[in-house]
Image (cartoon, rainbow, N blue to C red; front, side, top):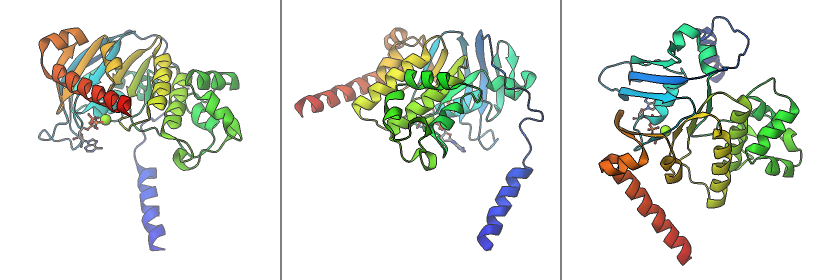
Length: 287
Ligand SMILES: Nc1ncnc2c1ncn2[C@@H]1O[C@H](COP(=O)(O)OP(=O)(O)OP(=O)(O)O)[C@@H](O)[C@H]1O
Ligand SMILES: [Mg+2]
């Protein structure tokens, strides 16, 4: 009884919470997209000026570009994505798409611009089909299959006893890490939004699984504007712009070549990673 009461209290808190959307217009598809501007954005989870998680973050993204975000753990990279998605509002500064703010266009329309592949895949109890359809509830069967194929998920799905109708267990507990990620990628492919936010998982996948996921991500990025929180050297090198974040500050930005020449933070991050990957290769070869 006591437990049920405590549970009920939390449920009522959620029911009573203010709605994000007062009206729910038709789920639209953002059609054109030209630019995304992040102007002097500052943010604190506690709304106080003392513990800012982001300070004066400022950059501009043009349609079709790939922006890599790198930097140490806790630097504020995933937080930046939460602000871009409108899950939190900046404490200072502003974010605009095609010179319009989220406030002026409405949160629903604003969010239609984005697809997210999060650092930790979020799946819900249900079938594989339900989880992929979450990207676009109106999609037909052919589109679901096409998305699964593009995400390199089709083959493993077909090997499961009930294919797309297989129940994946609580939060996808019956799938491996790499399989879950590929379901999340299929979902993002189906969603087909102009701006992709990819938060590369830090959790280690084995080499082969990582290659399959990487290949699916590359296919997902075709024709999109992509912001990618990157840990892999290859993703970073090919980006149009690299942003280096440390302790909430954007400490450097530029292309791979320019940042290497500058011999700053990126230079040292790059060579540390390079040495690590060479060490790994040596170990693999020796084994
Ligand atoms: N919901 C939250 N409430 C309060 N503080 C938070 C919350 N989420 C993150 N933080 C803090 O904000 C800071 C930035 O975290 P964030 O997750 O953005 O880092 P990150 O750059 O993505 O790190 P990683 O590379 O490890 O994923 C950290 O100090 C973290 O403890
Ligand atoms: Mg993160």
